[in-house]
Image 1 (tube, rainbow over the protein chains, first blue to last red):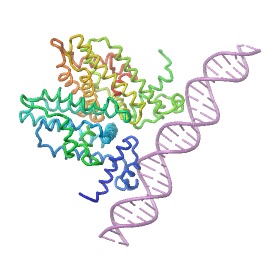
Image 2 (image 1 turned 90 degrees about the horizontal axis):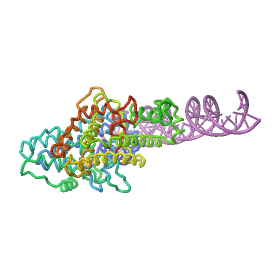
Image 3 (image 1 turned 180 degrees about the vertical axis):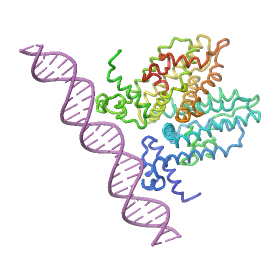
Length: 243
Length: 243
DNA sequence: GCTCGTTGACTGACCGGTCAGTCAATGAGC
DNA sequence: GCTCATTGACTGACCGGTCAGTCAACGAGC
């Protein structure tokens, strides 16, 4: 697990880097090969087709997210929820993460044309909405949340954050940082204030979003991670990617 | 204006049909040519490059949405808002419209890589959020809405609906209609109940979403249209597409 | 009202580049 | 010496874009 990463790991890393550098639409097998310092032929040795490779990559990042989320399942519901929301927000310097999310969004648009991709996307979607639903159900049981329709609330929260992020990454101008930059953060804050806060039982209080975002940046192993170590592929992949 | 559509119009129609049929990612100039029964060379005669053609198409559909929205600017704010929200919802039989929105989402993912596309997306985004903000400002002035932050509320509403639609179109399985199908509608209803309704001043009431959706289907010239006449290209294009 | 030059719309054939995928050969480890 | 990992050279398909040329419409000159 420490040194000598397996070929599969190196290739997944290569896909990750290549996606950030080139996006999905004009990602070539050669790009991936270059990023992991291997030959294109080797990629075909391990994965028959480009599709196989990309589906494997998707599986990889979704599984990673599953593990990260599972690792935090015992945190208190309110903190977990704020952290979940905070994880959609990009800090200003996380251009790599943004680039990766652009590629993931491109990948998502291929869902309708590719069943295997769609399957992974659905898995990721279930993970995200299910996580929020679990958090809410937990909180209701504990008495920190009022009794609401957890599925509906989860759907709304995830849709809102996903929509905000989509707008931010598709409209942000890489050169002159523009208004779209802080968009997700603004919407995340509004979501907390206008959707989550009314859900709190009397006496319960929301921790600040900023603190949660800061914590995520420091602690890679959070439910929906940021970049843990420089260049760690899946760090936050699955969560967003999937939807 | 009646018969003998101009070449430009026929080509735009061709792009529209081709996008629905093939999606954006594997859209070829030949596909477009086939859809409008012209030669590929003709497309290059009118538009130097494929990019030029697609940017022209984007301009075309965003402009169309601008006009449609402007045409309804004098409707009462509450009705306008419900109609705006209803226009994100796909009726079960609107597979064409869904296919088109998939292509538009693909196009949106190219924003980060193409300034001219990004420009049009930003225009569409301003249109959508600006429209909701206008509706809210109108309603506050008239006294039907409480005094809220219109920009923030508009951002939330648009993000939520957009996120819901994204999930629906990327995850829906074209063969066996699955759970993702009614997703946008569910979220739209939740948005009305949980975001819009609390905004209403005492005495004001929301018209039902279903009625608004029905009206949109019957009346193509609504702010954010459905398919007006069979095969009318831009009908609902801009609204969603953009941003 | 006929001819002829000009123009704009349009086409088919073709070119060059790109890219996924193949294959035979090489080397390393056992 | 056999297996497995890896490589570079190669191929075939596809696609954007070019180009030489056709054709119908139109207007001018007679």
